[in-house]
Image 1 (cartoon, rainbow, N blue to C red):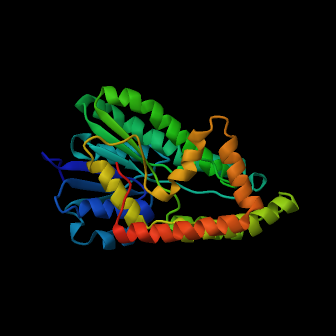
Image 2: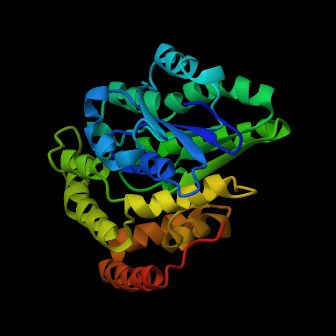
Image 3: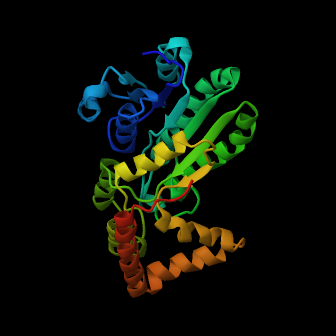
Length: 318
């Protein structure tokens, strides 16, 4: 696979499932054949679902390679194996989740999460950025989250990792622009994937003995049911997020930030509406602890709005 005129080589991480798999397969099947996709994963034994999704594009416009975002040598080996080390578009997607009371999570597990979600991105960018600078072209696309803009109850550490990702990219984007390199943070809300399901399955089995009774009760009886309602009402499919990512990649002037789910815009807008931070804090507190019926009614309206938007195929503007 070589990068010819008009064909851009895309390196995608975390392609064994979820958004990474969907993005890699969609770009490889692009009708205009604009992309050569290097779909990577840490464990090549998990390549089966991607091979199936890739179909006829496998070994034509899509090749699968091993890459562990937590290992500099692995990243270097993967990039070195590409002709001229050329990566036109980096899609940094590999990530892990963590939810639950802070007292019940080990510092070791938190460091592991940051090693993937934040330092994984840093290692990738550190490897491809010098070549992009030399060529005076490139696009760094990062799978962030609305939780990189707005913190959420019991998502303290995951949200912190995404805040770190946002700060890193926002800072780097200024320098990158000088070398004609674009940077985009793709910010989904809840997405229905195995990744999300596993996080919530683990949460339901979580040992809460390290925290107090009231916090454990809030987590089990308020947060988990609330999260399920939010997923049902607002959750996107990987295909929806993938189409939004494709629009970002093919945009003439891609944005720094792109939220894939327009139903989340009012949530993140609260933060900008009040610089003191009281407005979003009070709003979320009341929604979760004071007005359960208001939350249910709001989610009902959003559910209806989502079906209207899907029917009309109205998507956020870039």
